[in-house]
Length: 263
Ligand code: PLP
Image 1 (cartoon, protein in one colour):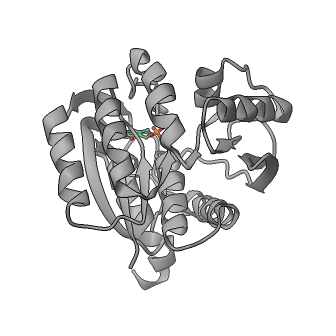
Image 2 (cartoon, rainbow, N blue to C red; image 1 turned 135 degrees about the vertical axis):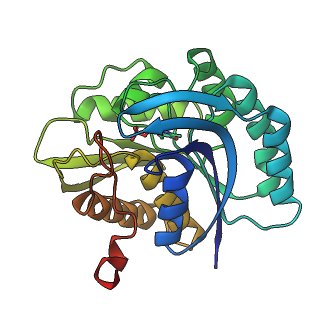
């Protein structure tokens, strides 16, 4: 069993963050391990509070893993603040594993998950160490300054992200209007598109976390980048298709829809 390390924040409501990562990695047939960077108190209506895990404890979690376990791929999600980014960046090379970086900035409920002042450090310290970064349109705009309103803008933003040091870039186009959700991969000078039916649902909490963890798992399992993204896109589309409500606000994905008939 290949091992995937998720470095991310905890979501008490279980739909996003490290909880989504564990479910997505498990559903994509890898073994999930975690370094928790922050704890959020949140439910389906929003984020109430965030407490950052101390830098010392983040470092100890990272050391505990790399001193003992060979990690096959890493996914990075919510990193919350600049000092956390620096600690993670200082330890990443020791793992010798491909890193999928989801540059989480703001929750769908509009709560800041990355301090504004930390964006520069994300660009300088983490992006160059990532094998793949997976921004949504808002995050791509924040990182590049490109205002993205169409597919051409997505391509321009991808090239800019490459110039910032990102090896491979997947810009998620799900928020552009249209009957399809089209994602754009820029890799080795070439563009690839992945389109799926747009699932019009409010049960979509944690899509970014889930997708990046699925890609990391597929990479850990030996898939090419193209195949890893293609299969993760198919997976996220089905988790959206089978999503459901757990509270009064935004619903969740069905990470384990493949077990559905058996429950
Ligand atoms: N909470 C945590 C801890 C997260 O890491 C994320 C991930 O992006 C979110 C919330 C945001 O999820 P969403 O954008 O689906 O609300």
